Length: 317
Image (cartoon, rainbow, N blue to C red; front, top):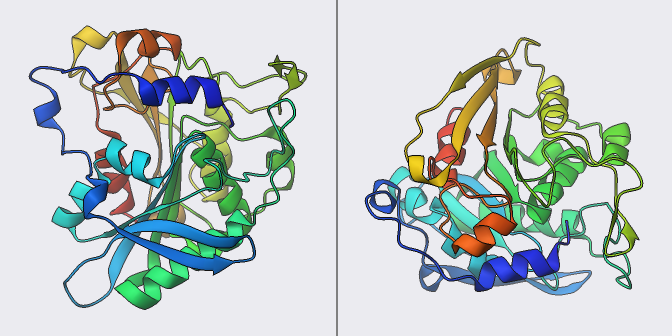
């Protein structure tokens, strides 16, 4: 979702030292070590960052879509996936949206901003094809996740091009109600959702019709629980949900994590919903200033989001 001001403030916020905890998580990525590539598309040249592997053979591909007002370099610095990719042997990819946004199918959410006409589905499919052809990416093991606007784009992509993915994940984002009416993925995808219960930008309980922000009527959103259920249902998972509280690694941040799981999904896998209690519109494990943290609903340093994603994706073989 195009939450330009809130996310822009987040990007400018000073990072704080979290003694005794950050060292427990993998290092965040260094975009200076990434390879930037450009593809010709119907929208003109489009870029993506990639971390190829030197070893021969086919390798899993993990794609992470940045949030609104962000870019590929910024999300590379905010995730541990590049570090984990080197250690675990997968190709990490961060595509670049146009003007910091993805055309995720919801139209315009900002006054005076016309709906995007970018062919982001076509662009992302082209990125996948390029990585498969040039870097030995395994077309049978391509995984996509997205943060905020990138999470909406991941869901939009899954609804329209699920056949090129092995699994997907939406982070701090909910499924638009209109999308849910028409979404018919052509393939069952094991799914991971992650949401904060005190998210001030994408409410955990969903967004009712007629909601206005900055004078603009916003799309109706399903709740976080309904979003997870939607994709778990389409992955063929069993209806029963098991839930367990996870360790509260940092009692100072006021949040605690819960894992909700549905098993028996496509290929004998599970679908997972990480519910970050008293945490907001910030991916867990990302350190931000206290003022911004409070404005966006709170932060959590109890888990590392990149680790959660790879621990899930690598089970889908």
